[in-house]
Image 1 (cartoon, one colour):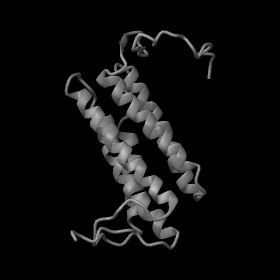
Image 2 (tube, one colour):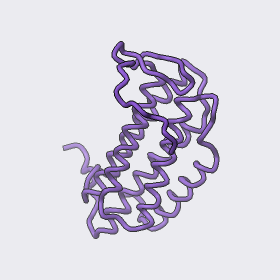
Image 3 (cartoon, one colour):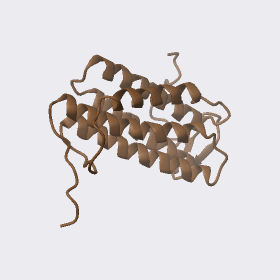
Length: 181
């Protein structure tokens, strides 16, 4: 990485605004910044999940997702430069298929939990859904490419299947909803 950030404290956001990669300044509550923040929060939770003792292929998958999310954030910061496309979607869809092929069909609604790693995967799923909603809100007021929303939609599916896979690999059962009482 080149020396892009030589100062961390700039004070330029003290007025409630922030800068986009193209130099424009927008309010910190702008829908674009809300979407960017949600993607950043998701990336942070993926990092927390990756800090768990997971097998090599899962670590590689999570590292790829973190890089994809950084690309997606870049696209949100500089909308004229698409960064997430069909190749990203294909990798996520292939991972979902691979992980899901080893799971039994769902018979009940799955509750978030089980092992710590599975619970963190469920947190990633929920935060991913929030990022998807923030992106949809942005698309309601500005033109946004469709690939980032499709990517987040597939990614939340992946985190659900990953949570199930992690519980199963640990020999634990999945907590399930028992219905109204």
